[in-house]
Length: 71
Image 1 (cartoon, rainbow, N blue to C red):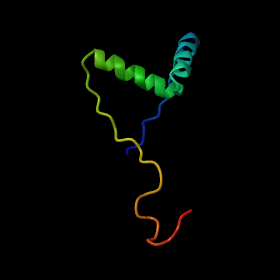
Image 2: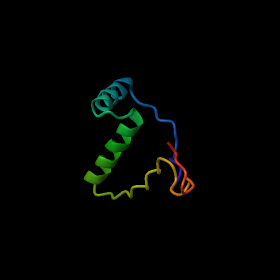
Image 3: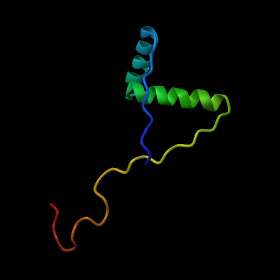
């Protein structure tokens, strides 16, 4: 998965507070909430944004030796 692009974002404190409240209600971080809001706004304007493949989590397949007990 390609690394996410990082950049500084300056927000009005009242806007940040509103996004924080929304993020808390949706159980997301402020960063994730801003990303959702941007994707929704772009979709309303007809701009298609491809989603990157999410990072794979957990142990990679085939790392345990056959016949051994991992427990």
